[in-house]
Image 1 (cartoon, rainbow, N blue to C red):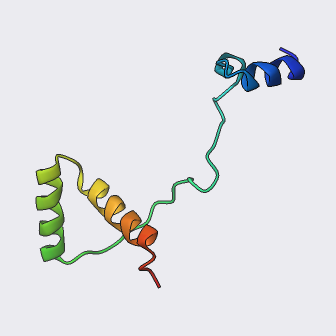
Image 2 (cartoon, rainbow, N blue to C red; image 1 turned 60 degrees about the vertical axis):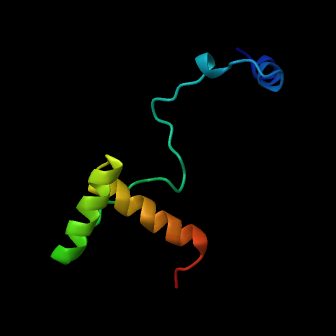
Length: 76
């Protein structure tokens, strides 16, 4: 598909995804970096209790709580 036709289809709201190769697509700023964090046992127990209540893994609780604090602007 030529660029002009692609642009026109996109502007018309047509599904152009069949013309794209997502195999090497990335989301800038969303790359993952593994980190290790040590938590005291009482904190892990509280995290695990909340994770079980929500039915999600511990890591999900940690990520959501940190993201909420960062979005709220309460970070230093």
